[in-house]
Length: 294
Image (tube, rainbow, N blue to C red):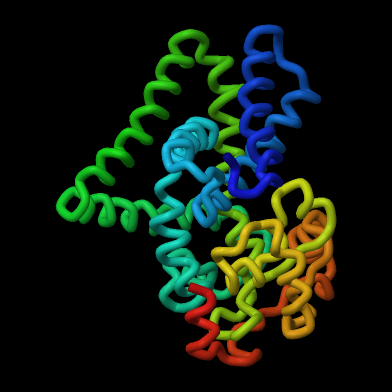
């Protein structure tokens, strides 16, 4: 039923997350289990992203059910990635027409304040974009509009029901983890693109190695992902090797946590750890690479 057997990892995450939440709802909060829940919310964000590019299942009805299940797990409709991520970000990766490009907000930065603010700044431009898209769907494809409204509706019903049953447990076990996952979904754009060159052929994205990739579906290989948006996540390590020598060394960052520690913490005290912008100093983006990235 799955398009790729490796997506059983995604299915396992999608089952484990609500199972651990229900367990703690019934038997009490546990910090080790809660830490796993927080990790799984990041995993669900990666699954949400991958499912938008490469649907999990061979059968369409299972993909629609997965849309709704991911909506409930994420606390936000899955349609938004089709609209803003596939429809805009992959067509204009970190370029001047990318609506959530990091240098749109307060200049070309890559620091702790920019990282913390980026999710809030992105929401301010993404939601008007979603609203306009939904308005167009009411005329062009009403069935799509109502499907998107269904996604909003089931989240509202879930939240309202759980809040009535026990608002403290809902807040701790459901809403806070979902907001954690949504933060990473939005903040990852800053991690992957801040101080990269949106006009470059290969240097528009940052790449990471380490445990991040096997645990979170190879999300660290972001250049290869953009250049081959339809490729399954299992193909990205091989594709990354093809482009690795063409990517600026500054964008090959090793482990994610090491990068964040250097760039957002140590840089506050030591100038040598501060990030340098590559905007405009690397090879320009050709029409062919723009087409490949879309």
